[in-house]
Length: 166
Length: 128
Image (cartoon, rainbow over all chains, first blue to last red; front, side, top):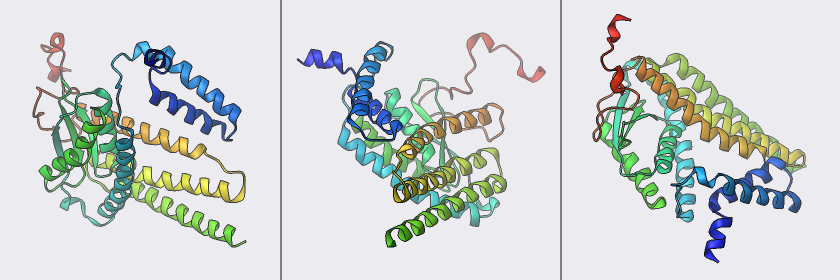
């Protein structure tokens, strides 16, 4: 049973995502379109599974939702802060800085999400990854204390991603 | 009647908020000093500004017609693609030395953008 399910749904999250995106694209909620989206959501992961051999298998869904809510809240709060900095702080009082973050997460998916989160939360842009993928280079718009920015990113986002992608 | 009035007010507030953040993004692009700092303004304030616009569009569609979910998709794709373009612009800034050279990584040898493949290492960059 588990084997059949594994063959039919090699990537349950992708199936769910494709179904939701298809239903949203149709822009009306009807069973026909939902079923068609479900069919697409089953066929496409089966067809593309062999090109994604090291995909993450167990994801903590509940923690993922918590993570999304935290990130959205941070985006809103930090946007206001950055707007305030841009409008009121003179350029010569700003201290832009490079921040180097040593990574504990190893999976490419988790690093991608961390880099995306850092870029979306205002004040920081992820710029580069080290050649072996063990450090992340982040540019901060106004960081008088570089270590605080690094610790904030590590404690707030990376520790949660570490638990999601176990 | 009052429902549609409330919706109109809510839409107007969202549009104003979106316009303010987009304007701040534009001001930041003009005002900030170096290329890496300028990258911050559009990638950030832009997301919240456009998010507010799309939310206004969604509220409008639900209040005055059938309702539409397309905006959720636009938001999702925007949030996925914005960091990628910002990342590439940052890499170009590092590569062309338009910004301060970043400190070396703590764990590995160098940043992947600055890495020179072995067969190119004896090329003299200063001559070209």
